[in-house]
Image (cartoon, rainbow over all chains, first blue to last red):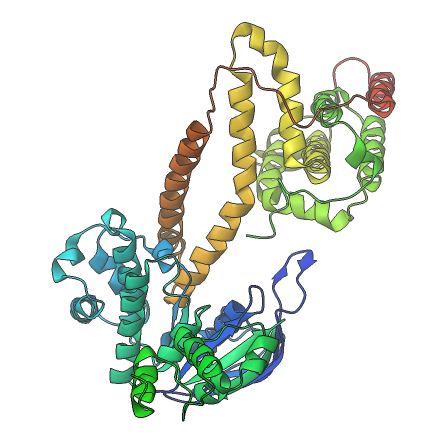
Length: 287
Length: 269
């Protein structure tokens, strides 16, 4: 079951003792529809990670309401709501391998589900299932997470989140620091999981090619505000707008634009992937 | 985690900020020593006046200092409690089995409390107003004579500055790991003591693992850049002794004389 995530005039800041940070989220209104794959882009410090944390109740709003499915997070203490939200929302942090701690991979994957009241047996079954889903061999379950390679650790950490069987999956640059191939694999795995489980997925990324390949729509953040929330084709259609937001164009699209400029032609549609571009070029008889 | 005041620097340009780190270190240690000269209320009033003047002139709010005391308050109260219970003499108010609360006990309890709080206040003044790098430079310079005894002073101060440098990094990382485990359903500060301790494992293990790998990285990096522990190193930042430093130490001397003159003669109480 998927669910919708809504922000209603949400402002938030980090309050650390005497030092109060400026608002990291400023009256954000947002509606992520159920089952959508949404990408969040923006520059460093624009509030992307804070937006994700607010979805998981790790950052409680100082104003406004965050709604996940039926659960509301309001300013102040709401312990019960937080527990519910964290059960529904699986959060993959940046460099999630830093959260691995258990003696074996299996125990680490089981940690989340057991915290949310799944029995040990059931959790082990789930662990067995998700480990193959993230493209690792079942034999790895018996190993220590600290003995694995960087890429394997990343997969185990993501498996630990998937094992919680969340309805909403939020990911903060899951591919950061991996080689291009490893990154593609992780993202296509997430996209696969998104489709088969019909999840609501929110992905923070810097890579416009990721956005073009996987996302249905895009949220652009700037200085703690959502400045744009659009369907991706509409979003990539207007390169002036992208330039204004200091965002790049996906490679295929950028190649299309150069081609159109050089040859003085106009292709029938906006191409976001290499395959689409190839098809469009065949159509006009250029390839 | 972020409410930790000890070891945190508050930028500013007060008189205390501008003092040489060596002055501040020596004065703080000296202050802790002369605390033990005090043995009656006059001397404690003098010490309190001094402490408050120093705190005021650091331009850091009083609340910040109180926060420094907060994590230690139970330890302090426990010590005071023992002192009150087991000091005999003077008028006795409660006499119940081995427990005896006397006027001497109460007074020395108050004194102990003052001593603790003043030690914390004064050392907090030093850490709040001195950049960690200056502090290590100061310690390095103060320990320099020990070089003659073949004590590895430079290595020691390098270790110190590396540890100080990584306190904020480690705190950040702790916050991140805590968030990550919270997202996986851990609730901190709940349930029995045993359960609460169990929730610490998923925080500390990742932190240990990352600290160890970071230590190795730093060691490699230093070696690659040609660090050798037995070679003399020049310093980028130089410490300069000013008149105000001499003056501050003179103030400490005056304080000592005041204390010696005000203290009760003979055995205390």
